[in-house]
Length: 151
Image (cartoon, rainbow, N blue to C red; front, top):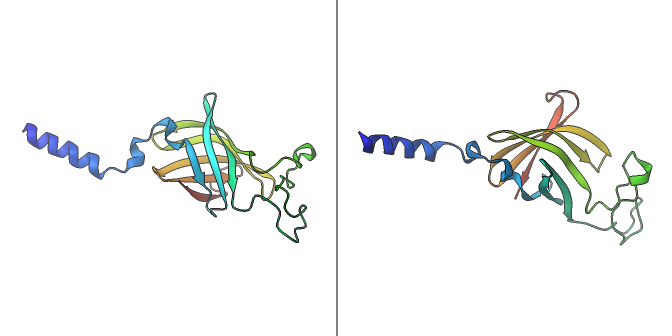
């Protein structure tokens, strides 16, 4: 009887997805965005989770760019706040205010998209130790877009 219980427990542990055992800090670390043209480092900011861009595939403006001088670092030129338009994209905080909600979900955060200068409500779901889904939305979660990030 004891052997049967142990075997049942082991089989359940093996068949349950890894994300079901997620802890609050399991999203910490560096993640590639869906396009793999940026790397975002997620860290703790007091009792919440935030993330900043730490790497860009193309960190400088290319030759012929209309957005900036070729060879200079890319700036947050789409930001609606005029004072922030001159901020470098590398180092830019784009994920902020997320709280751990349950096994594999972080919610109540905000996501800033430097490509269009808009900020969205957000939800993060840890799919596996090497993949998370980031959903940005307006108003309710049904009106939005999900992107997968990988380690």
